[in-house]
Image 1 (cartoon, rainbow, N blue to C red):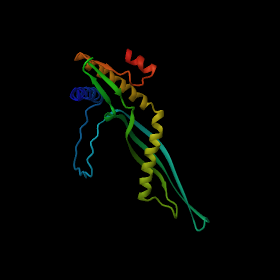
Image 2: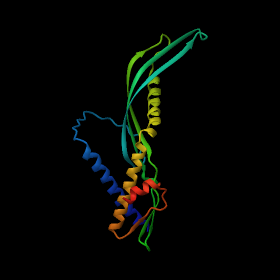
Image 3: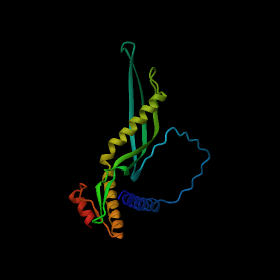
Image 4: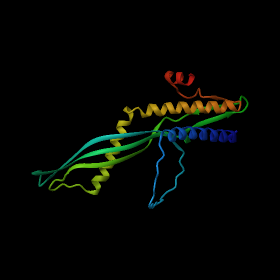
Length: 207
């Protein structure tokens, strides 16, 4: 039974991956990339099974100010900068959370769990403008690290209102439809009744 699930899951994941790759590369023009030098330091190898469903590009203007007081608060020194944040957020699924069982007697694949979309990565690119250092308060490398973390959190807070999660959920529904079609081709059926699906999403599946 486990071998049936593994074979089926491999077919499903392969079909879903090909579907999304076709959609991704079909919309993009070919690009030429010249790589001059690359040095990779591999510190840790970890097995992951995650699928990127949608990407979102963000452009934000972030005003940063920091004031420090010196000499028993008698003197204050302010540093500030205007930061343009260009970031790419990737939303997708942890496929290790997909749970399925095979009912060989009834020729049914039971989909017990399909994960919710999650933020897989946020890649910010910071550009600094109008940088002003204070007399006793200047920008340091630690500030750049802090600003990079703040930029990631700023974009993370913007994702719920961007519509990316909803788009990713629609992609998941399309993936379930693909799984159902694959199962039908081998004379089986897919049972996804265990998954919580809203009425709106049910209408999408029934189309």
